[in-house]
Length: 146
Image (cartoon, rainbow, N blue to C red; front, side):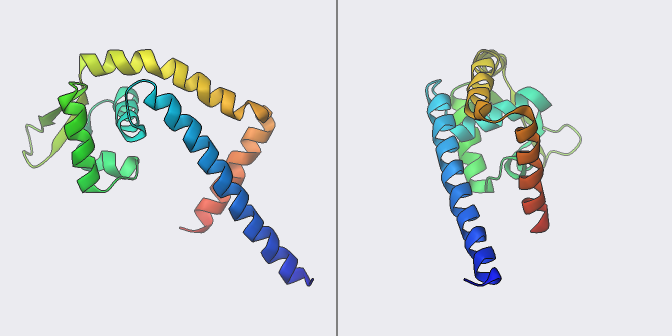
């Protein structure tokens, strides 16, 4: 095998290992979130609003990587569950904010500590130094593609 073939083989193996690890982590996180009666997307929206306050709906989709059609569907579902509400901007009526309700705030406040603990458990196989290195490596790969 040439050096170029070895390098390509390592790159392909990196992609496969990353994909499998991502799938396994996402599956564990999905099960955890669904045990609280939410989809991962619903949880993502609530978690964003919980930590950042009300947000323009179009910004939420960009932050959690959703299309506008999917965003509308998720916002509708969360509104029906009375976990968030739409609020029109008083200065520009074209802008609509999503704002977490008291019920939504209480639910995410109850769920988030256990969710955070689950994430800690998932990544507990890595030392603190390895986690920092892992983050740096993933950032470097992601940023190289922008």
